[in-house]
Length: 195
Ligand code: 5GP
Image 1: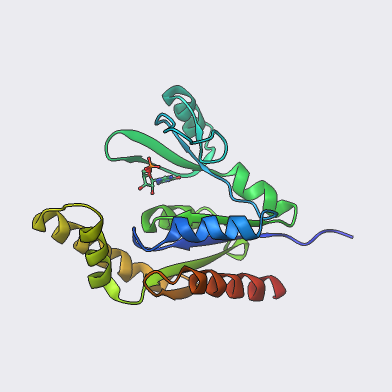
Image 2 (image 1 turned 45 degrees about the horizontal axis):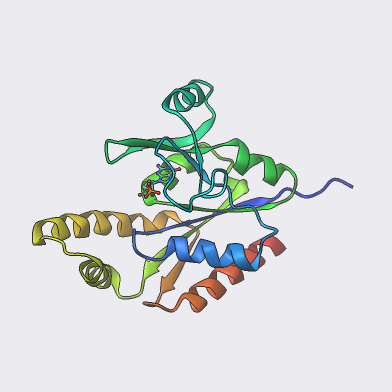
């Protein structure tokens, strides 16, 4: 009997909402799911592992992959390094009926969704329950930031919030309540898999 097709679950939302934390928790609980990393041209930081944190590749290799149309999306971040999502580690597992989990910032998701079959993915937006104001507090608490830079960050966060309507689901994330965020995410994943 042919195995049914798998699915990709994309988690997105403004920076600081807890995407990375959620992915880490899901990875720990469900090691059988696939968590493909991105490619980057930046150097590994201490403790980072090639093929786990990122695929660390040279600029030449990155350019080659662009030419081969191997990326779902890619971007130059902070005018410094290139980052990209390879198609193969996302799409091969779903051909084999597997579950793929992936985080994206809002821009990365907008680019990637254009290139995928609509039935192959489910998209989930993580929204801080306290809105932009709560995120601004968190950013200010984390490190010193000028009023001007904070205002710029808030503008881009507002633009990201406006994208929430493009997603299939929204999870309201209470500050620090990561267990609830995780169980809300699992509920969505398991209900989608039953369809
Ligand atoms: P870092 O170098 O600190 O790991 O990541 C820097 C930035 O690169 C983050 O803002 C992250 O969202 C972005 N980034 C990581 N992977 C990708 C990717 O596959 N595509 C895009 N467009 N950005 C990425």
